[in-house]
Length: 582
Image 1 (cartoon, rainbow, N blue to C red):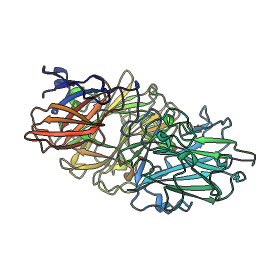
Image 2: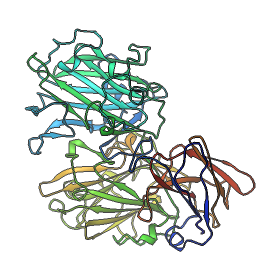
Image 3: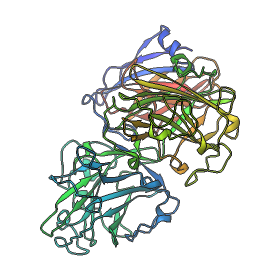
């Protein structure tokens, strides 16, 4: 494998970059990468550390919106069948509730604008968020529990009144994830209203969209929302045109948050509780990922499953880093306000002719295994520190867990307890259907899994299967949190996708040329297999980088023995790019 490094100085507007070639072989990348790879570094003039694109997760919180085959009827009644496949719907895993055991008193959210008093109970104020999308619209549902409903400030069905003074739901969207840093309520700033803004509906169906630039409200307009009363509060449904949000696509990340205002006495709002961030300040919004995550597992020599994650055994795999900012929390299982030292992890997936291997390196400052006995089977592993992996081998995306023989959940704890009851009890052991091993590390523990392909319907190379993994955190009083990759346990439709790449042909992959056209970069790549699957990846630094596929990169034929990659210029000060042949 040859690595060819191209280094570019910062781009100057209205001019083309200079290019410097380094002809020497890069032994460091030759040792680290087991697939044909070429690397380029691109530097762009701009603010240091800027994050402003639909491919970059911000350091806030992350949730998913999932595709809806049939659009929900926007009438304020959250019909379970209409919303069953939305993000957050499985077990109401995206909820904001009170929790007296937490310092701030709120699990899954925080106090919003000018608020000082935490709700006294879930009956006083709590809510659940669902998020879905189709080809034309973003759909949001919010189920609000509120024992006192006030609607005395904004008249029923009115426009742009004092909605924040009544019980109401506010949806904030930064459709291009541009992270505008200044709080803006003008309703005229193009960077804000051009791709989003604030959309509000009250319990009596007064609406407000002035802070979204008044784009047009109605059943056939840019957005529409309705509420309906329930026995325990009210429900709100929103439809927002993707065109209004700058036409984000599946796989894109948009800035997003939901706030709920609570008025208990008719004299103005008592509080606002918000999922994440500050109202009207895009840079603080959470990440809403349109669609589940995906990962391509390279085909390699089988790793040794001993709990020790050998870098050379997983060198061809892209590292996944999950923490409180970019992981998906299951709020019913615990809080989402965790420091990286309390819970974070790295993961890699590879496959061989007969097995899939998953390696997870967990950072956890307190390891607790007091519920499931060491090396026991099918104990309460979820109440201890543990790693769970999930497979949907026929990618059926069932609402729950499918019925295939060994699809489901495989769990391992730091004391060697395992659980596979929810995978229909395959045989555990080094020669069985699956196996796992663990070791303690300086920062926590690591787990390696091996699951035989024969237990997973024998997926062929090139197949995509449903996949999810999560880590449970027990700090001494049973599970305190569960942090997942893409979705919720035992709910296949929320899982991400795992592609089992075919073996990579041996040869040289080299970036011959880089050109720019407007806001587009174009790489011309010499490749040993022009018909193979190529991917452009990026990282902000080397060598301790995290490579991730570039969203929106297109690969086209570029002449004899060459392909051309085209993708948007980076928004930050510098990016490293590599091209891999899978």
